[in-house]
Image (cartoon, rainbow, N blue to C red):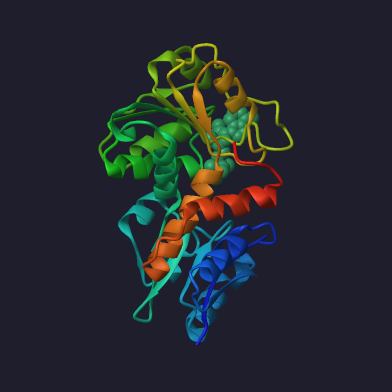
Length: 280
Ligand code: ATR
């Protein structure tokens, strides 16, 4: 019988996941379908029960349900528990188990393009929201040595550091301090919403002090190349956008459901096609 997978969120019409996963099922000749379900907050519990009743094999979870779904699952993996958000649910012997592949997807995507071991580098994380949390906790869990956090609101950065269950050396910086110390970092991870369409000219910090050997990873994928990435490139640094994180988080979710890691570059191509641009 055809297996069913899906994504729940609200809104959900913009999600690229159905195209990414259905293409993977097709390319691997698997008899399965992935569908987007728009679920309002008030219906979340009923939706989870309903998905179990119909025997869905696995699903993704997106805004606004990533945290609210946690108590409705049978088990939550420790990393997802630490992050405080689930983006992937697997049906395992009738039980729903929650995972978070956002941070692992980011790391895997960075490792494709970064020449060297990410974890022993000096890393600057810009932002302290939900995406920053997934990346900071995952990199720390994997053994990152040094991640400083720069954020507009220092209390949020403090909270992120305080609640991290994994050991990592971290200083907290204002955005101005981060800009001043920029030459100290090998990898800069941009997780704020600054530079996202339509405010495409905006940058979170000045790159005047960027080391030309540094690598800038922006998690924004719309626009395909942010002003921050362009400026980094103009200064001789390498950069990547958020399409890598998006494709790898999807590929890792697919692997958790099926045991097969699909080709992340196929998913990335679908993302670029949907965005109407070319890979950069
Ligand atoms: P996400 O879940 O995508 O990470 P989020 O949780 O809303 O989104 O986090 C947004 C991040 O962008 C935060 O770090 C936020 O800074 P604050 O913690 O100070 O709010 C940052 N951000 C958004 N707009 C900003 C702006 N205009 N200037 C500086 N930082 C901004």
